[in-house]
Image (tube, rainbow, N blue to C red; front, side):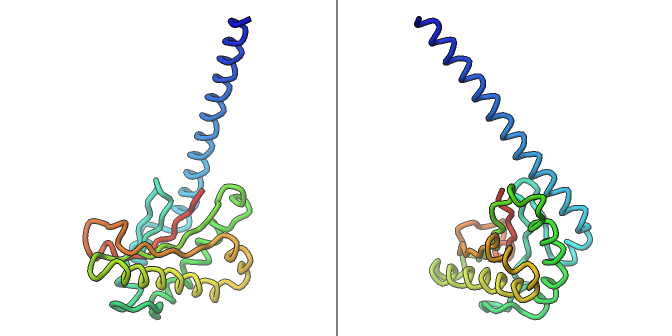
Length: 178
């Protein structure tokens, strides 16, 4: 009887491990497909013109803040509004596509800052910048307003996720959460 229980337990364990591997494989495949779709939509030259880079592993498009907001300002400047008018519809075509409706849980607009100033001050600035970016894309994309309101969020991280330099730390990121 005990041997039979051990065999059943081993069989269940093997099935669980096989299922887990399949889920991980599917997750990686979906992320790779999203990345490929983004890279087929945006050339490296375009991303460079935007002052942006893409992180394949994290599914993040990162924009440097010096091109987006005046120093210590929270409002989106005109050049960033123009950039968003070109970037967002093309990005939304992928990120809000029905093909990924079950896979993409959230599109998070993240505001980040440098360590210049207090944590609290930078938290407020980074949060307001992310929020104002989200409000701007809502103005740009009336057609997808319902999807934006259900999938797109804004979060400020102050200087809790620094980059290599002060300037690189000041940024807005569009993160696809799967």
